[in-house]
Image 1 (cartoon, rainbow, N blue to C red):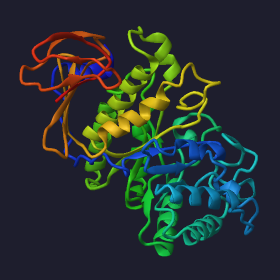
Image 2 (tube, helix red, strand yellow):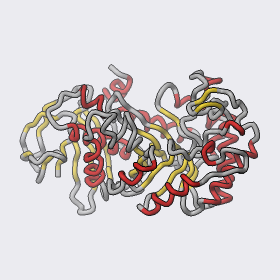
Image 3 (cartoon, rainbow, N blue to C red):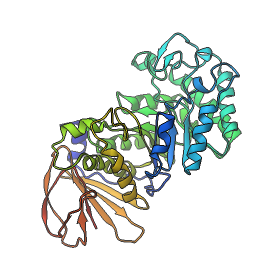
Length: 406
């Protein structure tokens, strides 16, 4: 049994104590890479966008000390505003000229993972950006996927190669600069990740004083090759850590998550089209995140070669492209009031604007499928993406595809 399976085996998972968000435009976020792809995601229902891997890192915006180039970011911000999308900008990635270790290998060349040699350079940059985009960029994330390789290992090619205290310094200075330039802006913590013991790295950041430097905890809840339910235990642990540091009111955002759709499409027995499998992955992801306390999700990425929703040359099908708009349309305006898992049966309850609740059920991936009898009181039973409906009282084989019960 997996650790998560053992965790769920003896008890019913229930709704986290944190308030559940309404599924609306502020909940659904996305990423893109190529500037030309930004407009292609319009009309899908995304109300938020996070700028990362968009040539808008510190190294891109300030290629030389005091010399700024905002051409790309200006264009992206204007486009997002034109679609009514809220914007989160990730600030980090040190230019070589400012780096304390300019020759150190990193994810984008050299020097970018090391803290700046002169903290005033960091403060000047953050201040410049926050002033320029005051009222236009709503939120700022201090750094992307921080690691502390000199403390916990992990190599020098990570996004952040400093120590916890270094990160707290950068976070505190960024928080102060942003709030001074734009008091209404929100500040995200540096983003952490689910691989390895990133919980320990988060605790190290909080132990060094990081808890006072952010409004929102940023986390990257990648779960593949497992199924979306793996995220439930991670979110609960995050909430427990925040609570133990007196940070009970801090929201949690899943600021980056993606699924290698092609892998699932080739490994899951297909009785339905790829778009229905992708629909199941997306719907279950959003339901689990919201039910256990995540209040915003940014899908990575619209045009990514592995996780992409619209990249025909790099992934096996474009099933996720129609699926994402259907999932967002289905969830919009609803609130997930609880998710439970009992004897491998997942059940999430949705409150609707009409007052008629919906229940979403599916089989846990640990069992694959199970026999399920539809409640006799059901007025409508269906699977989104399929034309056929099912009858109340009917016994069906329940699998990965969620069943919607009205």
